[in-house]
Image 1 (tube, rainbow, N blue to C red):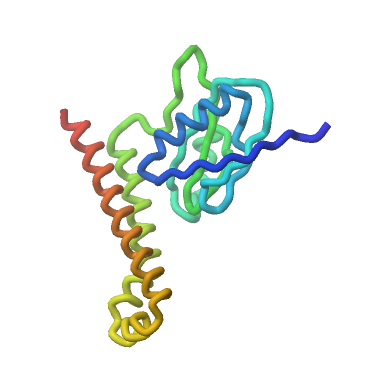
Image 2: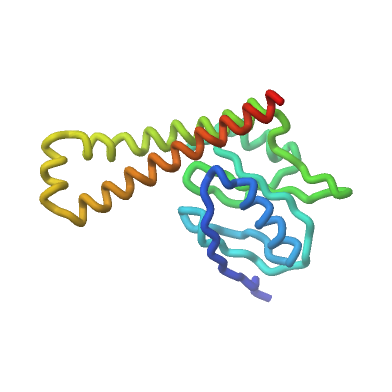
Length: 177
């Protein structure tokens, strides 16, 4: 018998990982268990099965995760589901209504977002250099479509950086209260 696969599209941003985790948990309760994802993490493939209460958690160890990192999760009972652009999705059954967490302290949560922030800035640096450099700026202005794409990409990068910084501040302020 072949697996019955269901594809779903769900747009989300990295600072909305908690919202996405809850959505994945709800899919599992409906019998749809995350099986695969596109490289952006927005078009997901689910395997139809028995409904189950599963906690899903996203972590950002970076593009190359340390094998010790992976083993810690496995030893903790987590199952690695998908990898998406440096992010890893893990799942673990909910037992007695207690939803398992990867991070239980604020500094660990903050570091996850900071790692992603560094990744975004490093990836966005070439784009910034192209837009700022005088020779390439002249070429961009000569080709409006390229300039539009470059400008939109730079705006999205700035928006993402701002939202990640905001998320880090929220976590720190919540810890201070």
